[in-house]
Image 1 (cartoon, helix red, strand yellow):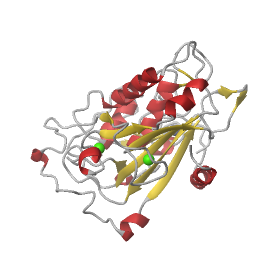
Image 2 (image 1 turned 180 degrees about the horizontal axis):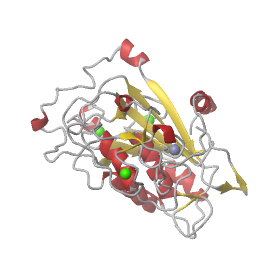
Image 3 (image 1 turned 45 degrees about the horizontal axis):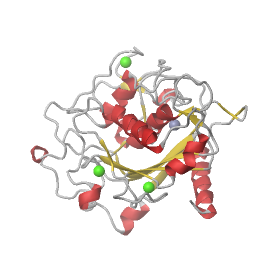
Image 4 (image 1 turned 180 degrees about the vertical axis):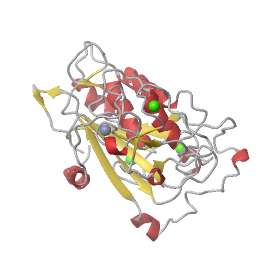
Length: 326
Ligand SMILES: [Ca+2]
Ligand SMILES: [Ca+2]
Ligand SMILES: [Ca+2]
Ligand SMILES: [Zn+2]
């Protein structure tokens, strides 16, 4: 359980972030990066380092993006499921891994590793806990994600140093005041898997295309086709584009299906470009030994941490629709 003081801090985070957000009513295809920017050099990525958090204490894609589920996650959230019978914890864990796996599908480097039991989740910490921690406790919205990054250029999945910022951690928090479902056919409550996929997209570096149509990237104006990403230069061919893909899982509210669209995948592949010879932190990439710990840490690095917050609400709870909160 988080203490009240921690919850207050969470609220402050959300309030701070909400100041800078214009709520748009338009929709768009493609993808929008975090922080919401028309400059693709501002993107935040997990760095493609070879070491893992659980083995070497290094944060990044090595060892997969390591996630840990809070000990009280199941006991807190299961009563909030509308399915009959209610899911058991193993089912939820299966769905969680499946949601992560959908973002990793077809990618030679990106993967997600369950380190529950090996790393204790820690909320609101840039450098403690797993890389992604999953919590369930009462708060606003259906779920939200907050994350920390540093002003360091990450190593891309193409082996190059990419301009931008480097994730150090993220928390995905499900609100146990809301209700959830596994069954796609139930109409009420948050579809757990789809909602989680949406939050994972935030934890990878993506924002809501339908909320920021003026910051939305695609290579063309076709809302349905694949976004080809150049491995050597992932920004190549990308332009701002205003067309609509209502099915993108990164839209808010989320769509009805727990499936990534071409535009969701295009966003992923921009952030984590796929090269024919891709390898995870492999020797062929000639990576520095410990880029995360050898670059700008200490006092200056610490003040360079930034926190972002997003929240998400789907549909109705107790018969009323909650406002979207960022
Ligand atoms: Ca890792
Ligand atoms: Ca954490
Ligand atoms: Ca397109
Ligand atoms: Zn969102």
